[in-house]
Length: 91
Image 1 (tube, rainbow, N blue to C red):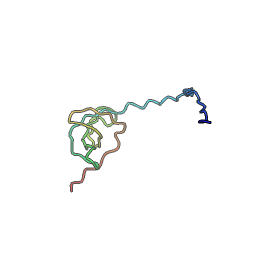
Image 2 (image 1 turned 60 degrees about the vertical axis):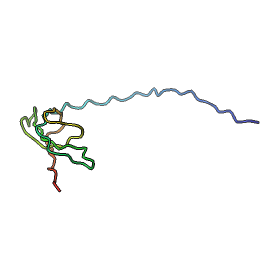
Image 3 (image 1 turned 90 degrees about the vertical axis):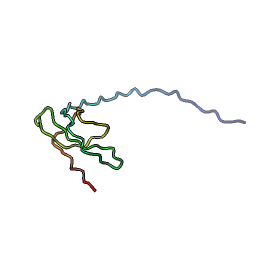
Image 4 (image 1 turned 180 degrees about the vertical axis):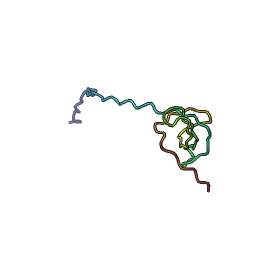
């Protein structure tokens, strides 16, 4: 007798409210003073020295790991100035 007929439902978009994402605090700008080296399994992480430009640690130079392309003189925003990366071990 043939194939059974399939019933189709009309697709209706969700009308649920989407909760808003809270805005993060701005952070602390810092200038890259020196690019020390690369780390990570594929060398995708750069270890850099950053001079903090504002906040309670203004003027302090710290070592941080940064993902992505960076060069000396770039300005990046740090959410935390308390943590510091361990130096890269040479093999």
